[in-house]
Length: 440
Image (cartoon, one colour):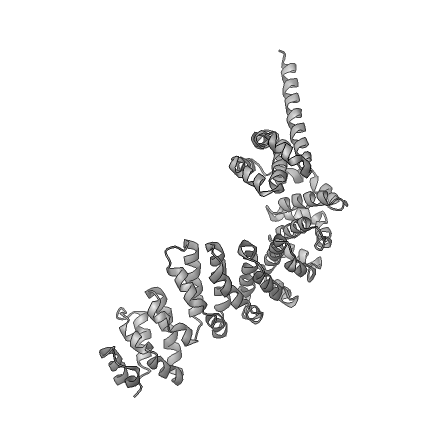
């Protein structure tokens, strides 16, 4: 066989592979074809093409598999069980497929596609633009420069739920990269329109709307304030209350991002009744990663001033955080975030009824902060001093074993100096003495 004949064979083989993946990708857009494709074993045939030497074949194979997996949960599970995901990840590592799409001049064509009347074409085109924009600020800017934001903003209220999901996702992928890109999304007047999506009957529309607002809020206090002024924080809190599990997660994180910027923005979350909702999430969500995000958000709210800390403490959140921190069943991330939240709140909390249980339950590294807060408040509050004796708090402080010269010992000394020596001695020498005697 001559060299020319050999090359012709390879060309025919490449053409056949290309035609095959293109045909499958096209057939997979029609629900009536899905079962036939599955029965024909098309997933096993597409799998090796994810590592094809020709980038367009890789990309089209991935598109076809994505459409099949998107059809129902069984097919998505088949993708996982078929060991297809590792192949896909490997192919992504080999080259930047999105950059190849951009370099081929596809972005302007995709923008034209989203203006077509056919809903299925709009969905696919928006999804592709979202996947391009997510990788880097440069790729997101390329998408923006093609004029996509204005078209996406107009589709936020489209009645098709799947299209709305993709539109909100695409705007999120653009906004997440930088302040400038987030501001461009906001300037397309997505507020207050996007807030209507937080009440959508489709759970993933809700989730993607929360994600979009989160990606905008995280950048600057000014963008967070804009969201507050538009009623976005209150709307997200209502949304969190209407759903469960991972659907809640972006909204929970949004509240933390808003609160972290300033005292006033954290107070806006408190005024909108965000703390009770977060406290509820902390108690009722079973997944550690959701609890961890909630603990982080509560810590960002409570870390600013005594008023902020009290707003968190009165919801009985601190004991829950302590139990999560001390539980051997909690993930490491949950333990770390719970500990940090406790520390943030305790260092500002002057609401002593919320602190006193920690004298009995907290480990030494937390106890130090609790005793420190009592040492700050008691010298200036006579009523609190009396209650501290009658509740048994002063007696408990005498039982704490602190290293001489340590910061904890200094706090204990400061508390003891608030009382007559005989009261302190009575607590120390007679730990079983009644509270009535201590008040004499």
